[in-house]
Length: 321
Image (cartoon, rainbow, N blue to C red; front, side, top):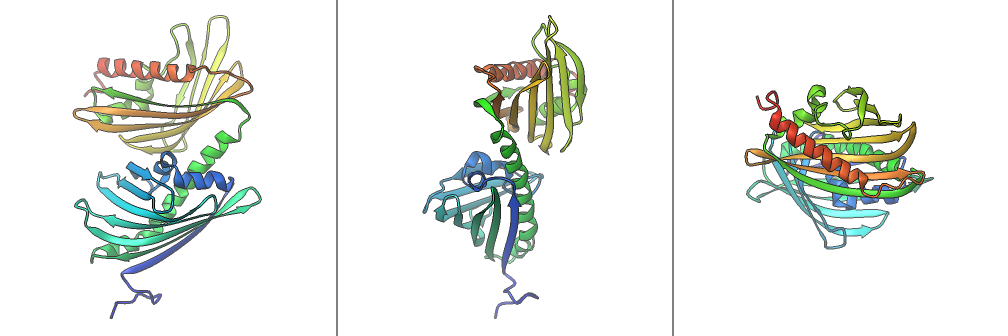
């Protein structure tokens, strides 16, 4: 006879139900579940990253995610979509496996998206069955894991909502990959330390900084103001949302020229070990406001920043110590 817990369910089984309401249309919330570039940003408990995230959101389509814990341990999961009814309902099976592919637990998750006056009521019901003795520990952590994931989903949807509701003339998104002859810890420090960042996060040669502040923590702000010859001013105002030391930085920022906001952006910096160096992946989604035409300038500017970062890493003795 199967051992029973206090609720009467078998001890090697667990069902978790979480309900949350987001101030965002359900099409947007549904997309956050079915588009890999969004799912990878929030899936898993706080501090986890997803170096592998593959989503084929159609009946019979595959779901494959490899979560990486803060200690570096990887937790693979595979699944199959049984039902995909946009933007109202998702049903998928899943199997958590160990590094050798041995199944540890399996389950079924049903996600419903209910429209409520422009908001979305999300309900997640996930049932799992342990397949090995030590899966009991995984089942014990199910509710906490799902709760933290949905918290991160809420933050991600809020950022998307802020960007997509802006009145805009142009949207732009780009991905830049760059390799550095420095460790992920050294590259991360170049972003996190105010003195180090001041060496490379600067404007063009004719631009002069007039204010620089960096509070590098989740919820912290960064401000950078400057002036061009002739008196034209620029202001950069960022907020950090997700920071995983030596691995990931997620932030939003707005740009102002002569006091007028011209853009809002969501940016992600991912750091991956590459031999003795680091592979940096910079992803940005930008919305340009009130008729401002970017013409690719934001991407060119970011590439220039990353080029200066390379020079700063090569010349800095403190970051190499």
